[in-house]
Image 1 (tube, protein in one colour):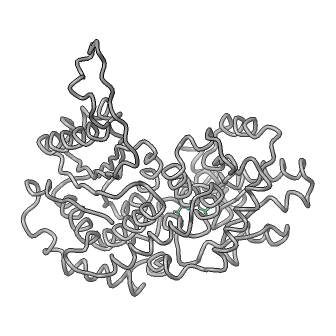
Image 2 (cartoon, rainbow, N blue to C red; image 1 turned 90 degrees about the horizontal axis):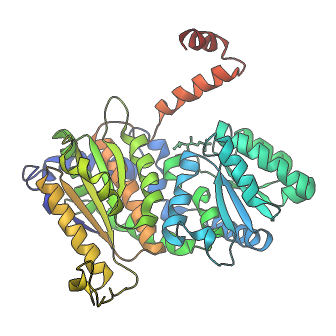
Image 3 (cartoon, rainbow, N blue to C red; image 1 turned 45 degrees about the horizontal axis):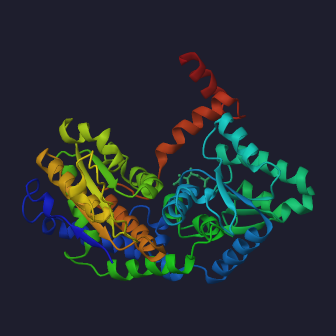
Length: 441
Ligand code: PA5
């Protein structure tokens, strides 16, 4: 399914850089398989494509069907790992223009992923007087952004449909036993879905966290899981020809050689939110203890006309990982009798041929400019391809974190801003910190 081309690293890394990391990779793969490394209690995602809860999966499909029948709009309320995966998959498979398309599935909007008043007001006016449902997703149930947004939309639902009617339109995805949202959902009688204890937010797209909104958008979640399952089976076979091992080794070797930024590039605009998901996955997993590659992303060819200058000639801090998909259809470039733009030499050629040459030329230019290149080639964008790719990146991320000797499954740094925000907002219990912060502002 996935082809990894590391040939454009040869002028940057010594021969044998993968073999030199064999012991580390064996150890990393064993820690993932046996759930016994740092953060091992959060490695349930490793076998999730096989071991997922089949009863809950059936309930997800039913709920998606009910949402489709009942509502013209589904609001998906969540942030970080409780948001990016669903949006990444929906935009990649159903298009960033999904809401504009003619369809028999509801429009989908994401809320609670920020604190912008303008965005919230716009969302309320976009819903207008249409029927809507809400999927609130929060493992802890206490994250400020989604909790505030949920208050607002719960209140709107209750005013519109009454308490009973609102209950029938609210779906809560949260911890199976603990937390404020679980308590509220039980008290109010909402249908609930589970964020498994052993799966952290950024690894949760293939749980109900991602699957309910994805299914509501009409995407085939069986095929998505099947693609992930294929990746799980293939990547579990360790060895130096395993592409996840090779990519993790290359990333680690490049980091040790002085590269500090990994730039994820793709020539398909619907990939933009997948790159956002990827950035959280790698950034939160590796960026700690003063270590880690900074994950960044670009959309080609658009960004070749903006970031292209820096990539070609700026600080030599980065390497590039290009994700390439086979095109689904074909478009032939027409002949223009006037040939004002001088492009008739392209007439009769498929647009994908032009894109391919743009990619090949760019890779060589960047390599010549001192930017090592990793190329990941995948078949056409479909559910199985996306499922495979999700698991591939998750597995590479787990291996990479262990090679770097960090805990890839915690995120202690995310707490710092939350503590300060709570203190400044006057949350009880934060009085001393509030005084300290205010004296410094
Ligand atoms: O990856 C993570 O753990 C975070 O991005 C969380 O998913 C995010 O902070 C949201 O947390 P919660 O689901 O508890 O509201």
